[in-house]
Image 1 (tube, rainbow, N blue to C red):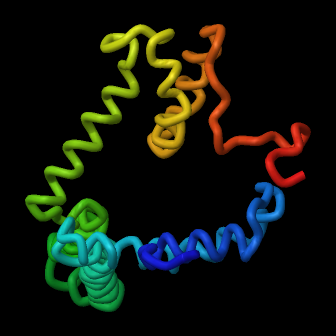
Image 2: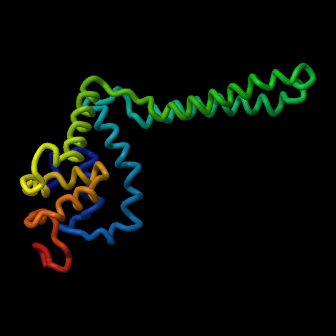
Image 3: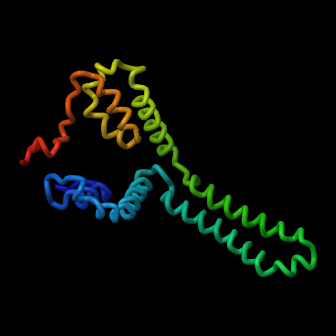
Length: 193
């Protein structure tokens, strides 16, 4: 049942499983990526609803991109059509539209990092960053043999942080790492074969 799930969680479940209990990744090839823009929008709306951001980050990025490209476009237009007039007066006048083109590029580029987290959002981001550092430096905190029982629990987070290869490599040296309960290779048949 999908009751009680958030909008983006429901979308993931519906688009991945489509009423089936299990799917292999090959069946999602060339289809699931179409879901990503709507899924990302649902996720942004959820972050605003949870008071992690004041406004949707993609909206802020788009506004700054439009402003930046607008400034640059108007300046390029003025420079192109005012070139002969500027050269009649002084070639130094060309510096003004060139500067505005540069300003437009800077506004569009820095607009990508302009979404501001709320205080609760900053606290959550700091917690996740600390957890990421914990996973990266796990051997500093606990013995790898001792942490093997948490491999199943933390592997999805390692995947999200993009460190799954180093994580798996680290645990491949341990003799008895349990296979994640949710993973069943197709050659094993799984629960439903």
